[in-house]
Image 1: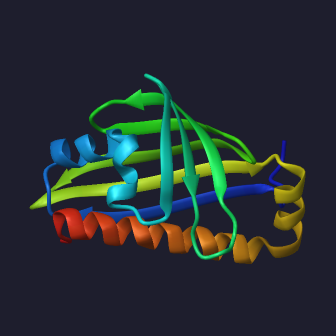
Image 2: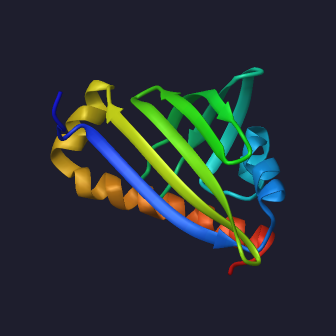
Length: 148
């Protein structure tokens, strides 16, 4: 299957001034994401491997995502995503002098008919919205741990 207008790939890298163990502990604690990531407005545990996460960035809509843990390894946190978009997101943690490099990757497809239509009409705006959300994550991580 080829890439369609409904497909998205995002990547983002940031370095923080904390050891990988501390960063891992923060990222594996989904229920407290809202304490450091302003665009995560609510998280509800649905069991040991699942959570409902509601995100809102710059655009006036809430994105409700069902996350299922696939990996909680010290070097790789990965979730399957379900909802109006489906796919995966992951954080790769690598030790660097003075801290941790975080490499975020998300591969999703718009599956909800309205989100698919929006992807066809305003995909650059949706990408901008996602980048604003990731800037919020980076700022929250820098506030929590400091930047390198």
